[in-house]
Length: 356
Image (cartoon, rainbow, N blue to C red; front, side, top):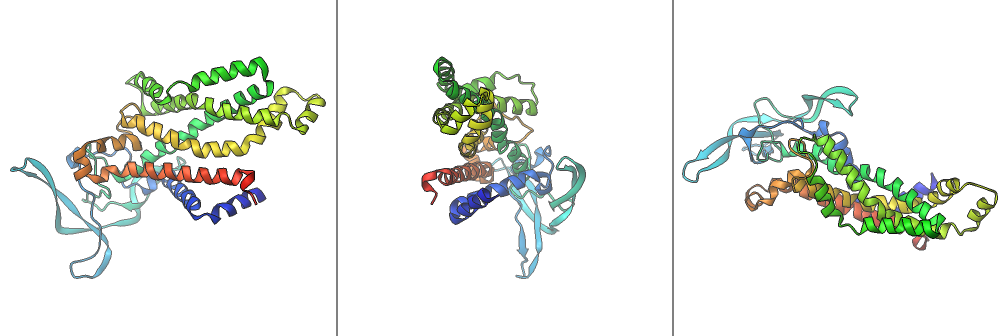
């Protein structure tokens, strides 16, 4: 436990990386309990309320008295002169917010049924804390469900690419000679392919009748099969230096098999780099999935990801008049920045030259 205590002690000393770590913990807690924080289920849609502005919350009434948080409904109107749909607040009735109240039913952590929510909408009130999109989806609720895909796809891809890259690089570096040349030329061939363009091509040829879960699984597999080569190359370089150490030579002399030496004695020595690689690789996977979904080649509606939610923000009119649609882009920026800052700090901590 002492190495972990030392790690967190060094992490706490630097406020910026520690803040990034806290931000990531909060983000993953939010998506883990998405149904609890969401006001509407993931499949909620009301096209009659397309592009409704965010519901304004009030805690002070017109008499400057402190009140329990409340809101007003919006009334949808049509302006005959400008030929535009407008939303105006109906201040004839207040709607008090409900905290830790009953809402739609869901399975808590997929285990048992529950209907408790942090915020539940009052009856006869259209509560949209971050407005709606063109399909009448609640942006606030979909941020949690979209994050479940955008923030987990990187770790799922790494579960495939890290073992492949580690074993591939370990074998290449330890055996050396002709085997090393063949394996490394193959890895370099994979690395030479423009990954994002290959990703677009592969995603575009996927059958259109696939479900979002199937598409999500295939995108994860594609990302993993593209990302292993660079990791394998670094592991191979580390193994080349580790295999010449005295304790490895001693293990060889007592007759240990090559497989045992690689898996039990050499690859564990690369664990510090693996941790660094994970924190620095996840942002690229998040951006890749978001980019594909933004282009319409990733997760498809009605399922949410931060990428396909951000798609509507490509229209200049939406940026000007419906800025709440930019929220997924802000969260992508925060998540990627936090991973990069934390990854840089972990790399500094793991570097023996920086340890005092």
